[in-house]
Amino acid sequence: MQILTPHVYWAQRHGEIYLRVELSDAKVRPSVHQILLCCSTAQAHGAKGDNEYEFSLEFLEPVRPEINHKSTQRQVDIRIKKQEERWWDRLTLQEKKPVFLAPDFDRWLDESDAEMELQAKEEKIHKISVESRVRKDPYLGLKKGYLFMYNLVQFLGFSWIFVNMTVRLLILGQDSFYDTFHTTADMMYFCQMMAVLEVINPLLGLAKTGFFPALIQVAGRNCILFVIFGSLEEMQNKPVIFFVFYLWSTIEIFRYPFYMLACIGTEWKLLTWLRYSLWIPLYPLGVVAEAVAVIQSLPIFDETLLFSLPLPAVLGHSLSFSYILQLYLVLMFLGLFINFRHLYKQRKRRYRSRKRKVH
Ligand SMILES: CCCCCCCCCCCCC[C@@H](O)CC(=O)SCCNC(=O)CCNC(=O)[C@H](O)C(C)(C)COP(=O)(O)OP(=O)(O)OC[C@H]1O[C@@H](n2cnc3c(N)ncnc32)[C@H](O)[C@@H]1OP(=O)(O)O
Image (cartoon, rainbow, N blue to C red):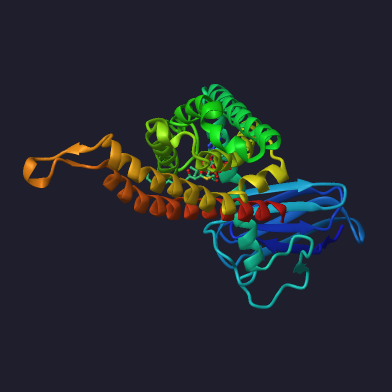
């Protein structure tokens, strides 16, 4: 029986060499020593029938001694690890390619494609490790359950306010503006007191909300609700309350259900779009409405001297709370800027990562 040389096809990745030997039903005896691969196959079926086949390759750079090989009915697949993870310019030490060797176009990648493949593999491994770390959290179910209930309660509260105001507007028209506070304030107090949890949640690692944006949001609204509307009876029948409450509840009836779905790993595209788009007109309108409320309250604080700070006689009797509110007016627009930027980034991040997932 004569010894023949089989056709060998090759491809590489940064860390590995793939060889495919076109022989069927081969019993392979491969051995690799630093850079020399000797491969003999006993009694294989090749193009010239049953024969003994043999080939050897002197690799461009050192490889690891372990060889992974698998014979199938059609071919022999050999995988060899490179000693150093590096892209090779060619397979063999000799510049001239042996005649039995050819590229394996089924596996062939050029260097940049292989890099992208490597990157995709690393990203997949990273994702799996993050997911398994998250899965390891024994309280995950409890945390999600708590957040789900919190969001549900807020959704119901704000929906009640929104529906109540809408129905009253449809029935009473503009007259409904004047008693918004008396009909909805209790529920708004409840929802906004609960909203303090939105500042605490990120501190406890329960939600991924930004701490400062949440603080600005909750502190800003509660200042308007409790200090301006709650403590000044003269403000409580002003139409501005209608606009403030309506703008607040309009965003919340979309934001909380969006979070509820996130807690159970679901998403509705339209709801996501509304959560990440409605704030664009609503936020500035909300700040303007709140600013109008603050401006309307200034003379009332001056008159009633409520919350005024006592001063030494040489400086006058007291400092009206309206001065603090004027400073707050400036802070409001600073808060608007910070949160607008935050929400803009959240929107961009959301749509950028969604686009990437599609490809
Ligand atoms: C230091 C003293 C400060 C004094 C401040 C003085 C200045 C005050 C100025 C204040 C101006 C306020 C004006 C305002 O009251 C006017 C209005 O509200 S008008 C109505 C329109 N308003 C809005 O649209 C704002 C609504 N509010 C918000 O969007 C949030 O409160 C805000 C904190 C601003 C942003 O939210 P967040 O950072 O949470 O963004 P995301 O929604 O993208 O969430 C990020 C990820 O966290 C997950 N998450 C968040 N919360 C929950 C939750 N409760 N349950 C479950 N999951 C939650 C969310 O799913 C996101 O996860 P992922 O990234 O995986 O998608």
